[in-house]
Length: 92
Figure (cartoon, rainbow, N blue to C red):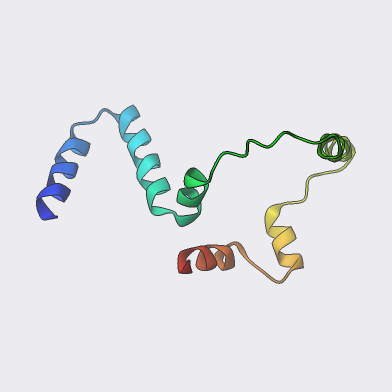
């Protein structure tokens, strides 16, 4: 493992800044359990129903007239925090 890690360090050291940013993003996604689960999730290939299309249209219309509710605020309504989600995801 040490040789592999050292080789990875050497390759990273040779990358130009733009590619380094991409590699860092990739590594973060690989280490984040939620991002990994999303990346590995099967593609939703079921056709959208008319009821679903209508619900999306209504939600978009609502957002045109109201401010969006921040995710943290929604979580707090349930007594949760972002850290609670991360902890739950990490334990799986």
